[in-house]
Length: 266
Image 1 (cartoon, rainbow, N blue to C red):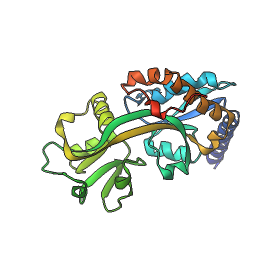
Image 2 (tube, rainbow, N blue to C red; image 1 turned 30 degrees about the vertical axis):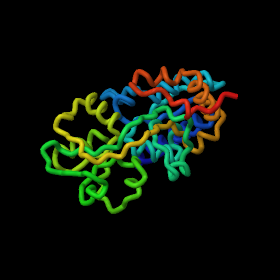
Image 3 (cartoon, helix red, strand yellow; image 1 turned 90 degrees about the horizontal axis):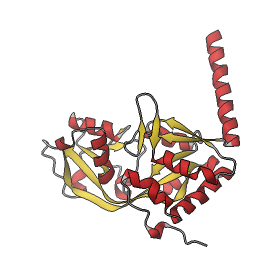
């Protein structure tokens, strides 16, 4: 009983400290999932990545300044924590009407990939997918909490197997526990290379959905109302217009932000 009481008291104190930090916003809590090369969590718990680089670049725009506090988590938990206001920021999110009701997206997007959603099968499999209808009755690994293209997102007839990461999805595919993995072609192949996964044992099926894929930074609704969040949103516009954002994303082999995404200068 004594241990339980002390543990409960400790938890309450920690929550109070987090709430105080949120009130001041001398710290900005950033959810980070392990998705190399765009975000990396080492075995020692060290965190790095593009969203950290962007927030570091934006620090001068906050009048009172802030410390970046990374919060490592699987993607689905990161998103849930953002929606619940337990963290302030999450990066690399595709914008959807449903998500617009839950969180605040920051514009412009910092990832604009003229890429495709592709489906990977095991190289040795006989699976053929020439069109969307061929996805029926296939076990398709999807990122838990992730979104793709509208038709696929809303299709409840498909057998979607939620997994915590693309790495797990590929591992399940190689073990024959799923038939297909859906992913963004450009980022998936970079990630497989970084993670040293045997991409040679995979094949892309014929069907693909091609479009420009946008990745945004997003704030929790509570954080978005704060002064520092508003300063960061303006800073994001400024560094994009100045070309600074292009320099920040360049080491990640991402294309420059399309001019049509930038608001006109006053």
